[in-house]
Image 1 (cartoon, rainbow, N blue to C red):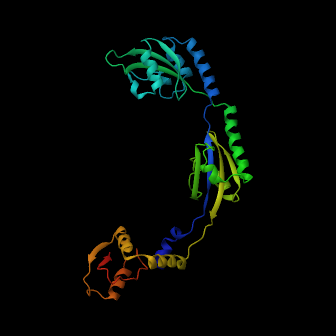
Image 2: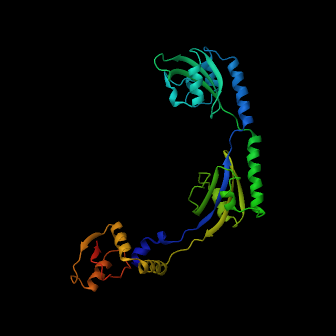
Image 3: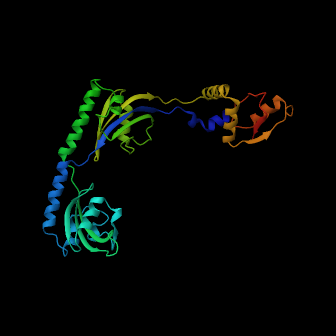
Length: 303
């Protein structure tokens, strides 16, 4: 068993992990940002015609799937598969007309209804120009201030991480609690393995609050606990396994062994002496320290 331990020693080591929280949010366009997008869409629509629509779509549209095709959504699009606001605007518009700007969750659309299916009101040939709201620095600063205010509350002990996580007044889209984060993991809520940030988080003091500004959002991170790396010894592992098997029930052992791929054989009472059973189990490396024989158990698990 010493040999087996040596070959898999790294798997028995206690890894360096931390627990903590990530609180934050992605930048999202404000109503003011949407108003600016609407103004831009209205300016484009003033000069949009059926003749220049494709060119304007290539120049202004932010829809990556259609912009380079002159805004075209294909020969015929199923309106039931589009957002309701867009579909309703197409259904209400006359063939050949340009309508809008139409607001959806994505931004503002200028829609050119090129043709309609006479037999199916849900089918039409449509092109569009999508104007996305630009997230202003003012909008970003508003989120940063909200989170910096939360940081001040945490620093002054007015609130705890648990309260920020659970209370509705802290309405942030990212509220992540982690328990066993390693340096090789992605950062919860941020979704990437940032080596520099991870090193900074691991090196921080328990209770210290870090701020992280990303291109897409702003976040607070804090470490609440840490488990240090510990290299396993054979004695440590043997003790852990012995403790496990000292407390396992025959039924639990039976199910464990089956899950390890053992075969089930029937043993009649008196067929094998206890020494034979122990020797048989010794031959099975997956349960190296099991030495208990249940007198009332009629099953032996053998490899």
